[in-house]
Image (cartoon, rainbow, N blue to C red; front, side, top):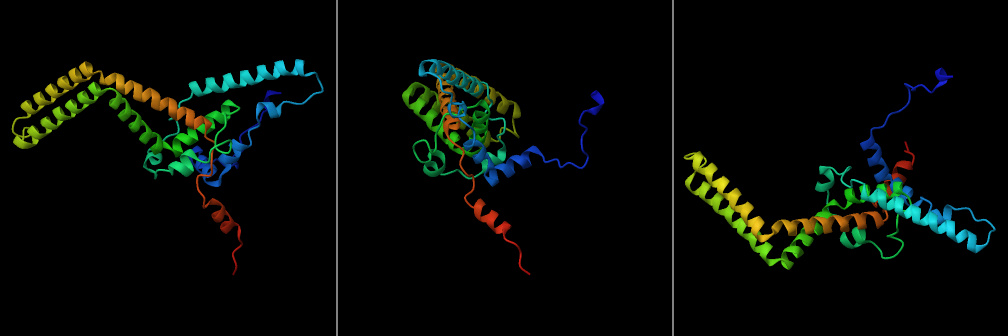
Length: 244
């Protein structure tokens, strides 16, 4: 009967999603979820059949799982869970946390779309400052390979610095606001012309695309590690009974 459906329990506990995510990260359960996901090959049951008949369906299942995971990565928004607090957090260690030990202990292909989504969103939150530094480095390398764009960027900065100096030197914001606004419009037009002539937009597009590809590749392959090394000590300390 339709009337026998489940009804909400008013005594049940309701935990907000941010608090639950924070508790999972601090307690290390995200790492357990990442490491406990079964691989498609290991989860498949073993049957006593000839190798010629079992290799075909197994390879097709692996290719299908790879395609599903890749499609989920391409359609995923990696910045959905990113907040200002993640950008303000200290930068993780490049060698210990960001890169980690080489080999299968730190990197593996996510076997399921759910695990890929979990890895990408959590790694983007953890290593947001590392990815930002890499983006700046990639943009600098693109400008180094495109010296005309670098000259255009320096010329644009010089134009805006000259406008700021003129506004502060003669007090155009208070004495002649019309002239100050005209200088701003002239600086905007000059910047647009410089960007178009020097092809700076292409360098920016290359840098953004390459940085996004590197971020998605690292975030999807990097296994989740404990976010805090002091969690086990704190848990043991909380587990000890209080003595009167």
